Amino acid sequence: MPHSIRNILSGRCLIRLAIFGQGRQEIRSRDIIAPRADMDDATREMARRSYGYGRWDAPYWVIGPEPGMGKHENDDLGLRVEAWHHLGSPELCDACAFHAYINEPQWNREKPKLQSTWRPLILLLMTYLEGKTGNESLREYQRDRWGRVSGGETCVIELSGLAAHSFKVSRDRKLFRHERINVIRQRMLTYKPALVVCTA
Image 1 (cartoon, one colour):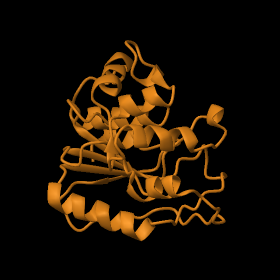
Image 2 (cartoon, helix red, strand yellow; image 1 turned 120 degrees about the vertical axis):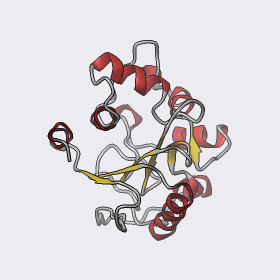
Image 3 (cartoon, rainbow, N blue to C red; image 1 turned 90 degrees about the vertical axis):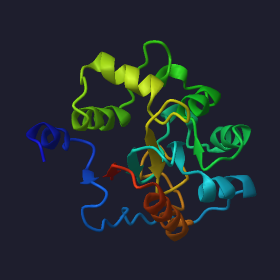
Image 4 (spheres, rainbow, N blue to C red; image 1 turned 135 degrees about the horizontal axis):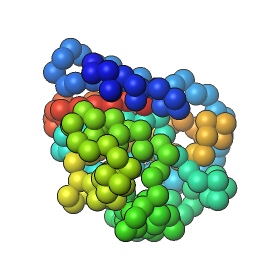
């Protein structure tokens, strides 16, 4: 692995690289136990069928443990469920359209704020692609290509479909886990991405 890439694999993100075709890779997630809470049918359906952003046929995949959430959302999933249904309840949404609906346009405006979780992942991808790695280039990629259905080249997905601000938030993270991992595995075998990055 190039030294420049190794240097990125530090700090808040633990990143595992898997180049498709170089041996069998197993997708794992943190074994986080949380009490099961009652949830309505719409939230349950999102937990089962919403995987993240982008396109399954994208060449570059990122698989995380769960979607993040802003503090201002107060761990309320209601607006996210509404956004998902508004966009047609797809397995993968367009990141820009989804965040615009939940009142977080700052990630895709003309000069976007770099999202703290996405930034090191985009930097890793740009390093892998031997592209420009300055903040302006990262902003442009985040705005125009990260998790985009049209014009993007990434599939940004999660093992859990339930967003949370942190792992301390009570969520049923094991809900549909085996089903979701099987779906991700099947999509991976079908589309054969060139690069898969798993974060924890």
